[in-house]
Length: 217
Length: 252
Image 1: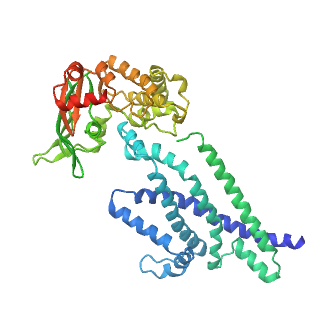
Image 2: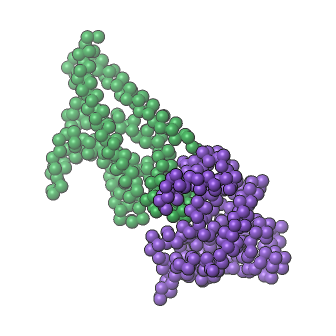
Image 3: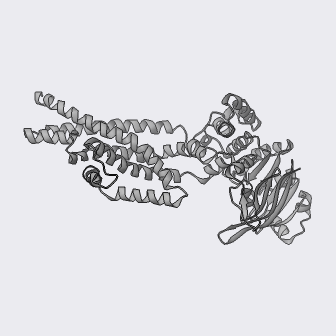
């Protein structure tokens, strides 16, 4: 028991890093994903093609490779190359990656809204922006809650990839202690933390779904 | 005064010509019923009026303002998006599939566009919206979501929603075709009421009895053309064209 308590200090620091990665990534990648989805369905072919290519790149290569690229290779790129500290590099890679997945989820949601909703808005005199903001996107949010919830739970666990940048998140901290003390308890503690975070998220998304259940379609 | 003037409207879907040079004028307060077999182009014609469909050729004039016309080379030109929107929201439209906003209550469905498009304050539009709901007999449903309503109730809300924009012309695109037969009556009643208030109405419909009773003019369309038009008595009692005769016979 005493041993567990001494482990908890560094483990909680690890949880802190993991949670920061998680929240910052989520808060930045959701709006970016929404913007990308709107660009993806744009009538202007060059824009939608550009975003399509971007999404293909982001979904077509491992997140770990993207992490390594942003941290080690980006500084070497001429003109735009900058050397980011490890935390910023990790956030940048995660946001770029997750925004691509969120964009596809939003796109699916937007395209699932019946044409009649656009037509009704149009004949009532609404502009495209008004239609999207007041009529289409509120309905999209209801439809994308389940896939967004899925992706968000994956994000909690994906944050453990930052160990490749030698950042001390929950999992890397656990492994360090295991290797030092020859005691497997930190793995169990780490698992409990991940499960707890997922439990909270599941609860939050269930609440969201309940709220949206106010209306049927 | 002409509320609406169409000249030589042509519309193609890919290679299929669905409107083959339609000309039509509708006077203020007139109720026009457009009948015809499915695929005759009658819904497309209606949808061209408020640019849900873009015409390939011809002129559209709404209350004296040009929405689309031909340039010197005979190519169809629409006015600017902003201008077109201003012209078009003088026309309310009711759809076959209602197209209510499912995430909003009945009252919010009605007040959304006046607030958003015309910038009317909520406290000013609510009493008007409630009046409209009373008129279509749905005041007690004002806080319900559309999914809780029957088809007939939905369509009456859709009519109220369109009226809240204070349109000068109402377009009805087969407003009762998606309804169970026992629910069409309540919708037709609301439309009859509008006609009595001298609303200019263009109604694409399969309800021959309604067309006969309420319309001042009936237009029979077939295969992208206006085949015959006249008063309900002329069209229903003494149709001249063989295609009109065949269609009306099939409707019995």
